[in-house]
Image (cartoon, rainbow, N blue to C red; front, side, top):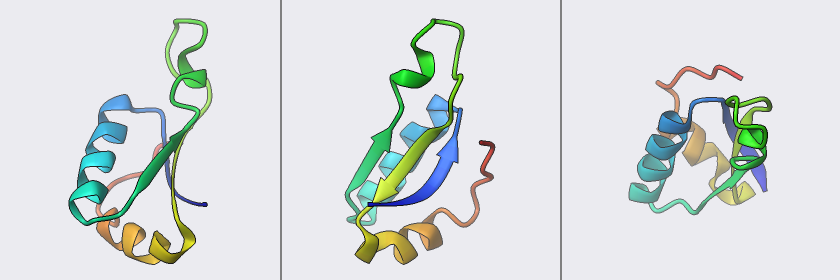
Length: 69
């Protein structure tokens, strides 16, 4: 798997999953639950990863989004 995006914003993660899903790219989200383990909000960045063969296309789809993590 190859990381294509990193954020602390759960809304942005949801949007990324939708955007890449519409493009036919299988998305995996890492640390989504770990980021909120203490209930105070994201403590570690949530990582979005895809298969290495899809990484370039995924980055192209996400090129207009700002990374914040």
